[in-house]
Figure 1 (cartoon, rainbow, N blue to C red):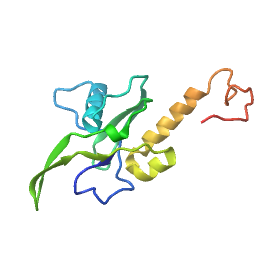
Figure 2 (spheres, rainbow, N blue to C red):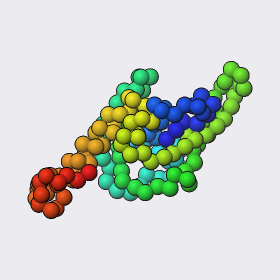
Figure 3 (cartoon, one colour):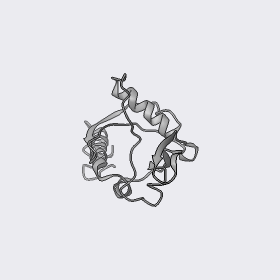
Figure 4 (cartoon, one colour):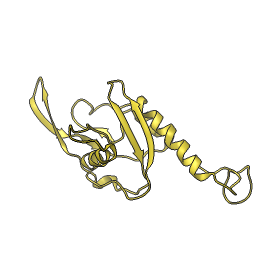
Amino acid sequence: MHPGGPFFVRKDAGHWSIPKGEIDADETDLLATARREFEEETGVSVPDGPLIALDSIRQKSGKIVHAWAVEGDLDTSAMHSNPVEVDTPVAGRSSWPEVDQWRYFGPAEARLHMKATQHPFLDRLDRALADRDVGPGTGGGPDTGDPGVGRR
Protein backbone atom coordinates (compact mmCIF):
# COMPACT_ATOMS: atom_id res chain seq x y z
CA MET A 1 0.00 0.00 0.00
CA HIS A 2 1.10 3.57 -0.66
CA PRO A 3 0.71 6.15 2.11
CA GLY A 4 -1.72 8.98 1.43
CA GLY A 5 -1.38 12.67 2.02
CA PRO A 6 0.76 15.50 0.75
CA PHE A 7 4.04 14.16 2.14
CA PHE A 8 3.98 11.08 -0.13
CA VAL A 9 2.11 12.27 -3.21
CA ARG A 10 5.28 12.36 -5.37
CA LYS A 11 7.15 9.54 -3.61
CA ASP A 12 7.05 6.02 -4.97
CA ALA A 13 10.10 3.72 -4.85
CA GLY A 14 10.99 2.79 -1.29
CA HIS A 15 7.83 4.24 0.27
CA TRP A 16 5.25 1.45 -0.07
CA SER A 17 4.48 -0.69 2.96
CA ILE A 18 2.48 -3.60 4.24
CA PRO A 19 -0.67 -2.56 6.12
CA LYS A 20 0.45 -1.80 9.66
CA GLY A 21 -0.34 0.43 12.59
CA GLU A 22 -0.15 1.16 16.27
CA ILE A 23 -1.03 -1.18 19.09
CA ASP A 24 -3.68 0.43 21.31
CA ALA A 25 -2.82 0.68 25.01
CA ASP A 26 -5.38 -2.00 25.95
CA GLU A 27 -4.36 -4.46 23.21
CA THR A 28 -2.19 -7.48 23.94
CA ASP A 29 -3.06 -9.75 21.00
CA LEU A 30 -0.70 -8.80 18.14
CA LEU A 31 -2.62 -10.84 15.57
CA ALA A 32 -5.92 -9.19 16.52
CA THR A 33 -4.20 -5.80 16.18
CA ALA A 34 -2.85 -6.76 12.76
CA ARG A 35 -6.33 -7.79 11.60
CA ARG A 36 -7.84 -4.51 12.88
CA GLU A 37 -5.17 -2.40 11.21
CA PHE A 38 -5.53 -4.31 7.93
CA GLU A 39 -9.26 -3.58 7.92
CA GLU A 40 -8.72 0.10 8.78
CA GLU A 41 -6.17 0.57 5.99
CA THR A 42 -7.90 -1.50 3.28
CA GLY A 43 -11.59 -1.45 4.12
CA VAL A 44 -11.76 -5.26 3.84
CA SER A 45 -11.26 -8.16 6.24
CA VAL A 46 -8.19 -10.36 6.24
CA PRO A 47 -8.93 -13.31 3.91
CA ASP A 48 -9.74 -16.64 5.54
CA GLY A 49 -6.96 -19.18 5.41
CA PRO A 50 -3.85 -20.33 7.16
CA LEU A 51 -1.55 -17.52 8.24
CA ILE A 52 2.19 -17.54 7.67
CA ALA A 53 4.03 -15.82 10.53
CA LEU A 54 6.78 -13.54 9.16
CA ASP A 55 8.21 -12.53 12.56
CA SER A 56 9.12 -8.87 13.13
CA ILE A 57 11.48 -6.16 11.93
CA ARG A 58 12.61 -2.82 13.33
CA GLN A 59 12.11 0.14 10.99
CA LYS A 60 14.46 3.14 10.85
CA SER A 61 12.05 5.04 13.09
CA GLY A 62 12.52 2.36 15.76
CA LYS A 63 8.97 1.06 15.31
CA ILE A 64 8.75 -2.72 15.54
CA VAL A 65 6.49 -4.24 12.88
CA HIS A 66 5.07 -7.76 13.22
CA ALA A 67 3.71 -9.37 10.05
CA TRP A 68 1.73 -12.34 8.78
CA ALA A 69 0.86 -13.41 5.25
CA VAL A 70 -2.25 -15.15 3.99
CA GLU A 71 -3.30 -16.17 0.51
CA GLY A 72 -6.29 -14.27 -0.81
CA ASP A 73 -7.84 -12.60 -3.82
CA LEU A 74 -8.72 -9.01 -2.96
CA ASP A 75 -10.09 -6.40 -5.34
CA THR A 76 -7.74 -3.45 -4.85
CA SER A 77 -10.14 -1.13 -6.71
CA ALA A 78 -12.70 -1.65 -3.93
CA MET A 79 -10.30 -0.83 -1.10
CA HIS A 80 -10.59 2.34 0.93
CA SER A 81 -8.72 3.69 3.92
CA ASN A 82 -9.57 5.34 7.17
CA PRO A 83 -8.83 9.08 7.31
CA VAL A 84 -6.00 10.58 9.35
CA GLU A 85 -5.80 14.09 10.75
CA VAL A 86 -2.45 15.84 10.93
CA ASP A 87 -1.40 19.33 11.96
CA THR A 88 0.55 20.95 9.12
CA PRO A 89 2.46 24.23 9.30
CA VAL A 90 0.79 25.68 6.20
CA ALA A 91 -2.77 24.29 6.16
CA GLY A 92 -3.29 23.76 9.89
CA ARG A 93 -5.33 20.66 10.79
CA SER A 94 -5.85 18.59 7.63
CA SER A 95 -7.45 15.22 6.90
CA TRP A 96 -6.79 12.74 4.09
CA PRO A 97 -6.93 8.96 3.55
CA GLU A 98 -4.14 7.15 5.37
CA VAL A 99 -3.58 5.05 2.22
CA ASP A 100 -4.12 6.24 -1.35
CA GLN A 101 -3.14 3.18 -3.45
CA TRP A 102 -3.13 -0.61 -3.13
CA ARG A 103 -1.39 -2.85 -5.65
CA TYR A 104 -0.15 -6.38 -6.07
CA PHE A 105 3.53 -6.63 -6.97
CA GLY A 106 5.66 -9.63 -7.88
CA PRO A 107 8.69 -10.26 -5.64
CA ALA A 108 11.23 -8.24 -7.67
CA GLU A 109 8.91 -5.27 -8.19
CA ALA A 110 7.86 -5.35 -4.51
CA ARG A 111 11.52 -4.85 -3.53
CA LEU A 112 11.65 -1.70 -5.66
CA HIS A 113 8.54 -0.22 -4.07
CA MET A 114 8.65 -1.38 -0.44
CA LYS A 115 10.56 0.25 2.38
CA ALA A 116 13.97 -1.45 2.50
CA THR A 117 13.52 -2.30 6.18
CA GLN A 118 10.51 -4.46 5.22
CA HIS A 119 12.43 -6.54 2.65
CA PRO A 120 13.10 -9.28 5.26
CA PHE A 121 9.35 -9.98 5.19
CA LEU A 122 9.66 -10.79 1.47
CA ASP A 123 12.65 -13.06 2.14
CA ARG A 124 10.80 -14.89 4.92
CA LEU A 125 7.66 -15.29 2.82
CA ASP A 126 9.69 -16.63 -0.10
CA ARG A 127 11.36 -19.21 2.19
CA ALA A 128 8.03 -20.21 3.78
CA LEU A 129 6.40 -20.73 0.38
CA ALA A 130 9.40 -22.69 -0.89
CA ASP A 131 9.34 -24.90 2.23
CA ARG A 132 5.59 -25.47 1.76
CA ASP A 133 6.10 -26.58 -1.87
CA VAL A 134 8.82 -29.09 -1.05
CA GLY A 135 7.74 -32.22 0.71
CA PRO A 136 8.16 -35.98 0.78
CA GLY A 137 7.87 -37.52 -2.67
CA THR A 138 8.29 -34.26 -4.57
CA GLY A 139 12.02 -34.57 -5.21
CA GLY A 140 12.28 -30.79 -4.85
CA GLY A 141 10.14 -30.20 -7.93
CA PRO A 142 6.56 -30.75 -9.01
CA ASP A 143 5.02 -34.19 -8.85
CA THR A 144 6.77 -35.30 -12.06
CA GLY A 145 9.46 -37.19 -10.21
CA ASP A 146 12.11 -35.04 -11.94
CA PRO A 147 14.29 -33.58 -9.15
CA GLY A 148 15.77 -31.09 -11.63
CA VAL A 149 12.46 -29.30 -12.22
CA GLY A 150 11.68 -26.70 -9.55
CA ARG A 151 8.39 -25.12 -8.68
CA ARG A 152 7.91 -21.50 -7.62
